[in-house]
Image (cartoon, rainbow, N blue to C red; front, side):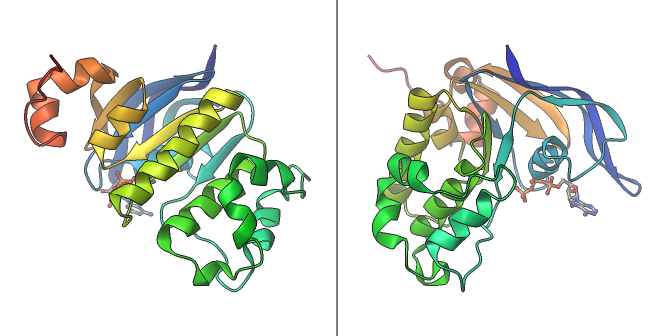
Amino acid sequence: MSMVRVRDLVVRYGSATALDGVSLTVGSGEMVALVGPNGAGKSTLVNALSGVVRPASGTVRVAGRLAHVPEGRRLFPDLTVEDNLRLGGWRSRSRDPAEVYELLPALVRLRSRRAGSLSGGEQQMVAVGRALMARPEVIAVDELSLGLAPMVVAGLARHLAALNAGRGTAVLLIEQNARLAFRLCSRAYVLEAGRVVAEGPCAELARSPRVADAYLGGPVREAP
Ligand SMILES: Nc1ncnc2c1ncn2[C@@H]1O[C@H](COP(=O)(O)OP(=O)(O)OP(=O)(O)O)[C@@H](O)[C@H]1O
């Protein structure tokens, strides 16, 4: 069953076409990557999923709750971690962060800290936690790795994978870092200038010379 189904989606900003006939699915419990360069239309697609932008044509269907971890995290810097989490639950009226602390135990010791005083990686974890407060069936994560050290990203990636495996939350990972995205996800879409130019299982995409050259820094050697 598809949790997200996008068909022939066209989104325009004035006379500029940001998405030009994009189709994509995320299955129940699946982890899917969306990669592409700056300006390809990745954020526009997520904004269409969460209803922030209106399609010119095509359809967007999301089964269940979708939570979005926005690029840049967008926390309230002067509020505590716990208050930031609670704000994530306002829609679903689930204001008790206990379950999020169970999923992301590292947040427990940060709960009284001002969000603005946290490191980038800690803030990203709060942003993921805040999205989880809505108890989503699908979580769209916009640029998980942006501005973070590889080790920090690896920790966050493990949390996402555990969330996906343990709870069956479907994940759409929007990433410029295709190496990370391909490692974490089973399937991926490559978006360029508003169109899907490649899609399929990550292992297959990584073998495509065009994708490897553009996104993986050259051909990927198979493990012996
Ligand atoms: N509000 C807007 N008004 C006009 N054009 C916009 C607007 N938002 C985005 N665009 C344009 O739409 C295209 C797609 O932008 P989008 O932000 O979706 O790309 P992206 O793949 O998320 O890029 P990045 O990786 O840099 O965040 C770009 O050409 C961008 O300049």
